[in-house]
Image (cartoon, rainbow, N blue to C red):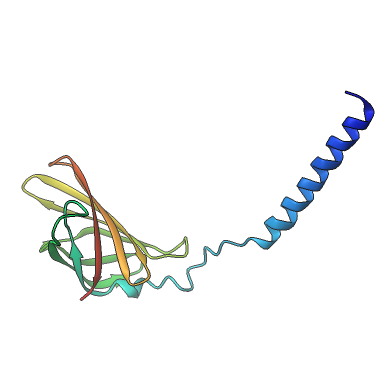
Length: 137
């Protein structure tokens, strides 16, 4: 490799670094919680718990009755919610909570996307993970 190749490689690298630096200043990801208001989850939600995308809808209710700080109280599938938590630090309303039945605990989480909650439920007793979605009733 001669001196000219080193100069061209260095110059190309500097140009790429300059372009990437410029672009990084233009790209902005807003993690503020100004638009992520926890109160958006208050109320009754119609939850679709169908087991597969091609199955018929199977509806149950998720009801959030109160919010205090980063915690909430309610019911899911007719069962009281425990450990209800809310996080808005990343610019969206995200929730997690626990319910139980005779088989054990269910750990649930969801994110509010527009007017829809998109969630997951992990059954520790029945050994499954399921997707669900919910819209305000």
